[in-house]
Length: 80
Image 1 (cartoon, rainbow, N blue to C red):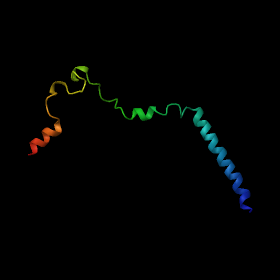
Image 2 (spheres, rainbow, N blue to C red):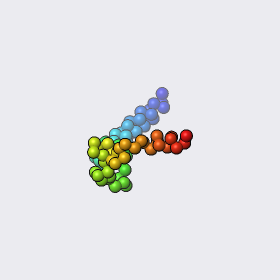
Image 3 (cartoon, one colour):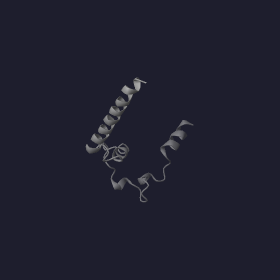
Image 4 (tube, helix red, strand yellow):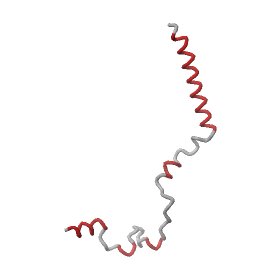
């Protein structure tokens, strides 16, 4: 029973400490852009964008080789 005298103030102190940490994070802008990091990881900024001329007429990215088989099919044919 005497242990509860120590545990309740410790629990209240830790709860208050957690609340203060949350309020600090809220004021410092930690939660301003939640989707930005998720979107940035999907795009690689190191590559230069492809010019529109390399895209096919229908926008499928095939360009001049629209009739050629995909590289994986051509690779399988060479192995046989």
